[in-house]
Length: 425
Image (cartoon, rainbow, N blue to C red; front, top):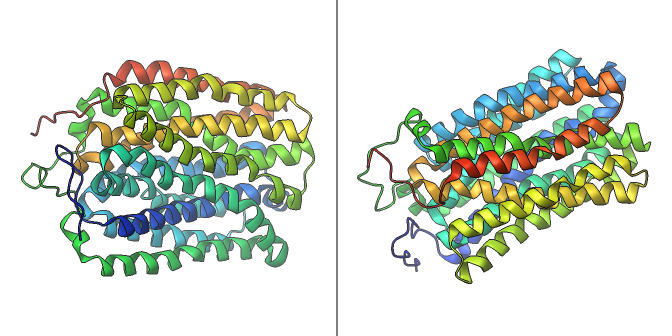
């Protein structure tokens, strides 16, 4: 028996509760696998840098081969998913990045490694716009922040699992074996996802965003979304804030190896701790938003209050670089990531708060382009700063202070968080 739609919302009454939980679980698995394939490089970085004799700038260039391509593919992927639908768009994305991840085992140096990471990024760009569109289509508005937090938790879960798993695989089968095995996991997910789709043929009618309200509405052109300041609010909220996340994902294993003297096995044991904390933050942030709205808070008040909390507390990560204790280093990083994740989940929810489902993936993808552009610049700056100064102190300070900038610019553009009336309508 299908649930009834909530009056005045764009919730599409396709799934019962059990099926909806199953879908969200698959989306969590998808983002988790995405991060397995992304982060395996950073976990194995000490080994790869020694084998290929890479400087900090060269390592940053390999990271940016992924990030620059991801910057473009993220925006394009949102447009593609809005036209192909969640099932076809996401299946194509996972197959692509799984092939590229597996092929990374063939790398012979910095150039080929960069090429394979760029190919990975082409497919990886489809992961987040796809689940954002799925949530906007099939989850009731009051539960969207919780669902977005759950789906987004794959980034934390993947970052938590990857250090011990990649270290184990590399120590047993070498770094090439680690890339090959991690890359192949995505094909298993594709089989499970397509099986779910066959079991729920009713998804087809709404997969392209055709809710009752949207069925007769004109298609939204991607460029037309640039007219709205809400689109740019999402862009700049991610442009300034997301470099913090990518710094912790890509550079913390290196930081622990070079500054705290950890070997590969030790990195595998402790590098996932901050991401275990961020995993809980994904669900905590969504739950807090749900409770506040049930207590009568408006969407506008809820979103902005959570973002302000994150802005005030996430810069505590700066203290990590000045602590010589491994315990306090990881504690400060964990606190920073915990509250950054409150910001992230809230900003990820904004496209669905502002725009109808048929435009959500496009806006989300454009925001992802902002995220990646900011992170490309930050990654380049981190590599150059480390080579020039030999110190992580200016890096941690600069990364930590980006959050207040994101708050000032983002809230200036956001206006009131409420649905936007599109000019096409």
